[in-house]
Length: 420
Image (cartoon, rainbow, N blue to C red; front, side, top):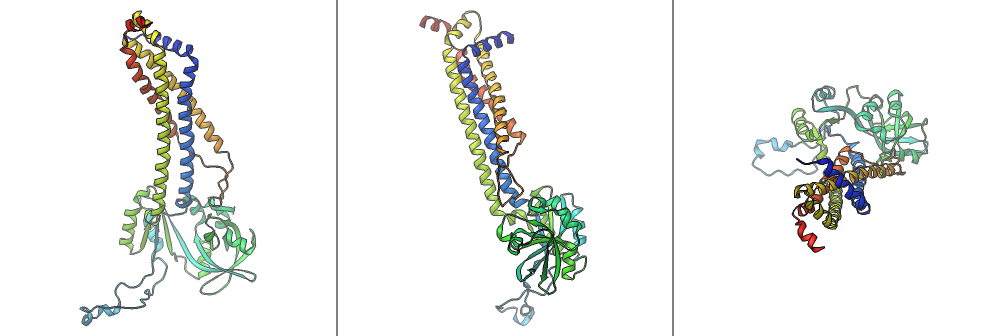
């Protein structure tokens, strides 16, 4: 039966009598775990910010009616020429509309799917922006602003104004920041827009949109769906695009294939649309975790070396303990207890230092046009990182204490005493 009260008492005495070495061992754990927490919180925060640049604004599935040439040209329908090789030059797209046929029932069908978080209609059209003598070509997208803010975080890219203002104000527009700068416009002004089929429509500016991509901000603006339908002279069921948001992004590919077959539409999933971005994200995450694991391993070897030296310096104490009746098992428990105490104290201090440094970084100003609403460096305070850090502190000190203590267990006290 192990007398833990005596074992822990001796371990405590050993630690306090060599307080300098104990502190160095604990600090080795502390700085190793603190560095790991700080690094992984900071790097995963940055990776998350970079992912948000694309993923926040990209639907998991984009559904639209692609205008393309007829697969079967008239000449191929003649039986007399079916054995011949037909070459047709300057093939024109077939005459069709951009709108999605039965768009509203399709949206209702998609939203009834348990995997779909939301399906939002859009109308995309080309227009001219007119302010005085200035005319600029660009794109106008009709949206449901409140739903876009809810599902695609649109508010993160509105630098002035709000989605609610666009929703509640008739004949209003959320203007790209690049257009506003070129035309010297401000919120409350009116800008005239002209669709490619003619006509001029004045719209009130209720806010500015900034995606962080200068070329896009110089042409892109948003308006309420009803406003765009009115500008184009279309009915209330005129929809050109459907953006689908899923609960699980992994369902994007099979659902997009199902939509294409069922409705004879083009459905592009997010993985296909952003294949290169996915590769970049994977590489950044690999680098983050590789560096983090390296930090932990280096800290583990440091802890082992310190505890190993601590046990060799305690040879006389080990001999005395064994000579007074302590078994090899008891000696091993004493040094294992020391290691675990060092690991616990160092691990807790490491978590506190990591939390403090990560919180400090989160207050440092950080400004980027890519994410105009981000004011400080992004930090990812995932509790899992703290659990991993503390678990590694305990595991590394256990292993670092176990290997030397196993040697201490086998030491012959007579040889040590004779050597003295």
